[in-house]
Length: 135
Length: 157
Image (cartoon, rainbow over all chains, first blue to last red; front, top):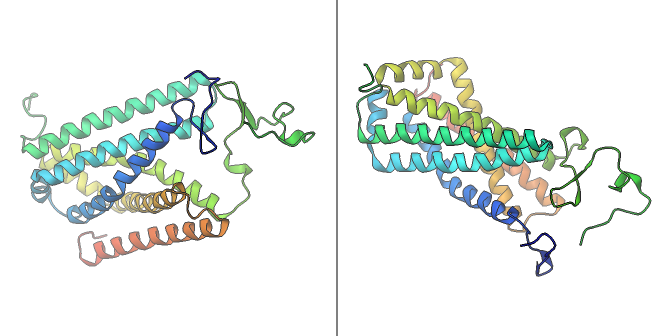
């Protein structure tokens, strides 16, 4: 859509670029995170003070492993959007803003990759790291 | 349709503005700068909003702790025991207490936002009341959670 185009629904201007899509994604991730946060609180309760063996048993439950991975990924998605909004609000120099948004995205992707890697290993009951890496 | 500032009011006129309160957006339109903390007169919804952002920032650092916890578990019992002893220290518990408070408030404040986004609760009085409820609910959730953790001996100081 060209920048000059303006359309209205019920007297409200329709987003010209990607603002409306981002708004929807923020709300969607928030909605998904409401039950997952409560589950996370419950899991924190279960795992507090539990030892290594109890934790391993907890990770081997496919329900726990799946919910944990989903919680981590949706949280990082939500966090990435939230951090981007904060940067957009306060950093105005395009170079600094784009660099910062890029760095934040990179951190989120790295955290997601590392987290899912650990969760999959724990769920499968793989040998402790660094398995086969010189240990 | 942009809303024009009052004519002759320099403080509201982007074309005459010298305070830096307006920025030119990438689409060429002049829009007010997002408000900074120091230009807001105190009111509860503003405090609730700022706290929500602070909570979000704290939770972002919390993801580092969560991934570190996952890593310690994946690296075996020694690494897990070391991580657990650090996190079970008074300083570690303080960190997790803070993270749980941030999480609870981000949850309740987020639900408050959903209500607003649905178009409800937007009169000043209801908005303030929703903010009070979100703050009290978060404190109650965290207080009950940690009281239960200590009383059942799951967490000891």
